[in-house]
Length: 301
Image (cartoon, rainbow, N blue to C red; front, side, top):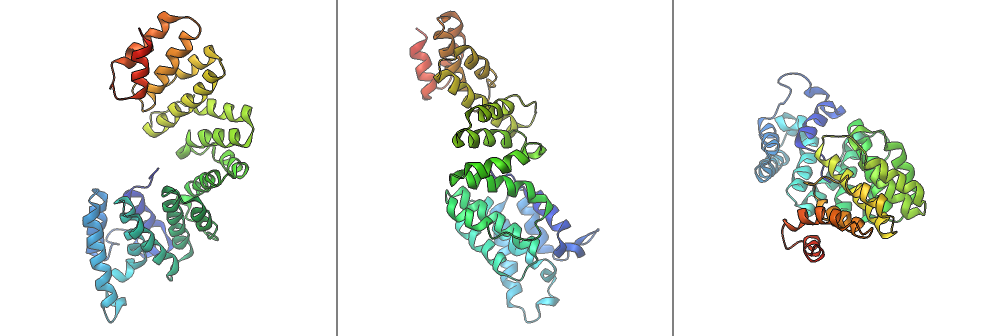
């Protein structure tokens, strides 16, 4: 999940040690760098990348770089190129740009954040061993803005590498983190179940499925938690409990089709066919190419 916006990037620049001189009005000393940030903020990634690439190339060619206005922002600019390319789905180039920051002469917090982003690229590309190697290179000062996200990524990498106990330990400590509400509980539940702690894992999934939130991402993971738990109960013939959990899933969420199908089967399995028709009838009105819709259309008659 790509949870960092360009607005966050701009905020990071304002609080990093390398950007101490950038505080206050008029702190941005290079207008072209500012233009690149503006384009990125508007989601115009290609324009942002091309502008920043051009500016960095020109900066590298000057005889006295300290006299160039980009000199004050050069580390942030190199870092931003990688971030913009990642947003533009240019993973290979993003990796090269971020690696250049890691290997360059940059402050420890900037280097650690670059490693974090490189590890996230590896994780998104389904390379968990490379991601593990990357996060293990992080040491020293970590920018406070990414500490929780770094620990959450570390837990996800542990899970991808089958190290569920270590992942669960991290996720336990993140349960009260507001920005990870729902996500920590859901992943903790999965980690505990795969570790063999079924009861504790289901309790964590149930907790994630009861979250009260208006955030769309949080509501999505809430729905997913209820779907996973409800499906498990259905497979164990605990139909009443399964029905209760599956009915928590929103009708307009991304997991609603499978939840409606399961809810109908929970009723039908208890021979409450009139109730089963209700969720299946709702489902039958949806796109016929979906497997859950097709099954409901066959089951309803």
